[in-house]
Length: 332
Image 1 (tube, rainbow, N blue to C red):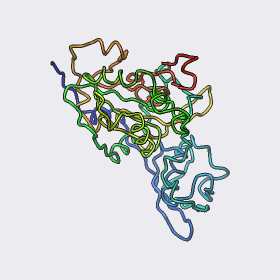
Image 2: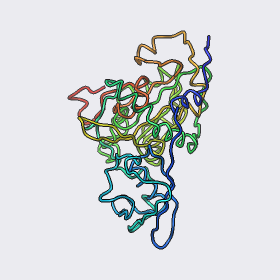
Image 3: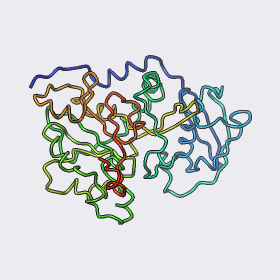
Image 4: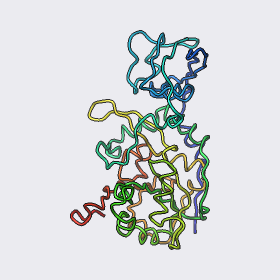
């Protein structure tokens, strides 16, 4: 099997961040205590609220910020650079903290198990895709997420295999009847799921990346028989919503924010996936309609194309599966 070596993924991705970021060093008072807060000019108001949440446990809807800007604070998508604040600025935070259950900044937004309703197809807009990739904030968020990410391998990655990243809810599973118990697990899975994974396993390692918490992710995979079973495939690793972050763009001319699943996190952790292996069997590539970009050796299948906004060339959108209407609509 012939291989072609390429540049380190970390070096390649760092090339996107050609300009040094400017940081603003602030301090604020809350509940009789003083805190330091560092923000990049490329950060959004959303990021500031997330930082305040992590420091004080005061959720965004209860945060009242006094003395930082004149008038009202801009909306979440506003850039910190637009606030025209300088290092050394002091302000006051007023707000009542809540319980430990929402300390995680990833819970700033509700992430319900719902079928796609406001999706954005970034693959149809190359200019928007370029803005996503080149945004200094997004580049930095990937670096930060990479440094914080620890991937526990369930099964080791195999030499010379590509990587298939699969979404869970409504891509391979109808979540509502499973969690409500209205249908047995086998009927909640997309038809042919196990047969499909067994067919591609000789060529692909498998990752499941779900926009849900680890507890629910593990429970769903066990219920589906995807881990802890005797199937002729194995899951290499799983990622949950804590590996995602929020990006900002426009939808129909209006500000729009959503979470993303940046494949760069995986490539940074497993540089061997940057090596393109020329496989002898191309039928599986045709079956997946694989679109490899350069040396990237990964395909991401999801019912929400916005989830691969930072990697549109590796994304393959699939229709959301609903077991409740499968008989009528033949959703596959």
